[in-house]
Image 1 (cartoon, rainbow, N blue to C red):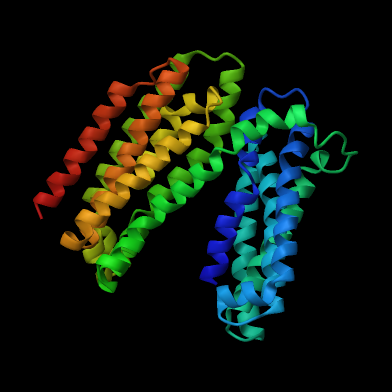
Image 2 (tube, rainbow, N blue to C red):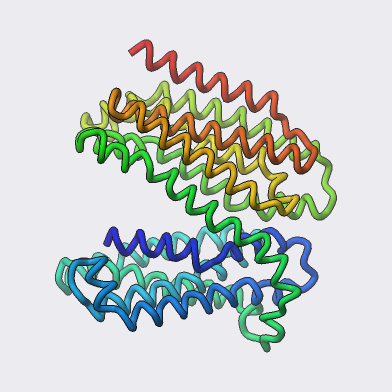
Length: 393
């Protein structure tokens, strides 16, 4: 199942060709949103169809590479999952860009509920193998995409014309394609710490580290909720000429709120251990540093918005690439010495670098400074609080 998740994740990054993000960027300024949608989904559908064809032609080799034995059923499910995931992704993007918050949230809950329900049913009825888990996942994505298509049906069920218009596709690809390697760099950044702990640490370090991320999960929920609707709102504000002061206030209020939330979580981490169990006690020591992962990413979504406004998506690659490199160096130095704590510090530093780079680049491109002195002050307070807690242990 883990290999299925990895392949779906990486395959999605490549097959979307960044056009899902191009759709988000151009939605608010497009006069013909339906044509924009179809141009953005056409290439991903072609790419995922080609991938599925190649995979099925060589299914024996590829399935053995992934799961250790040739399986036609597993290969078929993987390809179906890819195809349905494209429909699901773009259908949900339409709902997201229309700022239908409750509908979008309901789709996400519906998908997870289906996955859980089908998993429990299939495990009860069939064998407890990876095929059963993949089947439940694919079926949940299929039904979720069907619901999303129905809720955004005006974009799907009318004549499709001029989908592969070169002049119209060129600016979309110019914005989207640099996001493919940038997303891969973020994927590397998010996985480097676990790889480092596997090679230079111990399995105990890896377990403690994973448990630490479960504790900061509440911040990840806040991250996802805000990021989901910040993009459509920010682009709508930008295209309608909203004052920069409003963006500045969002950056400052967000930085202040996240600082308060981070310090509160740090103080309450031992209380959380009482709720989750004693096995999380060692992991709670990592919280002051692991919390920088969702917090810095969320801040960068606001302070670095100028990169998206200017359509200079190649700078996302610069920021994520430098952050990934710093994470590799930090883990190489710190993990052999400090184990899980070293990985958490290295990851925190790399995400701070990521946020600062996006903020500086965004302000240079847009020529607007979104509350950066105040944001940096809040970050320094969080850094100080983290080391104060660590040194006081």
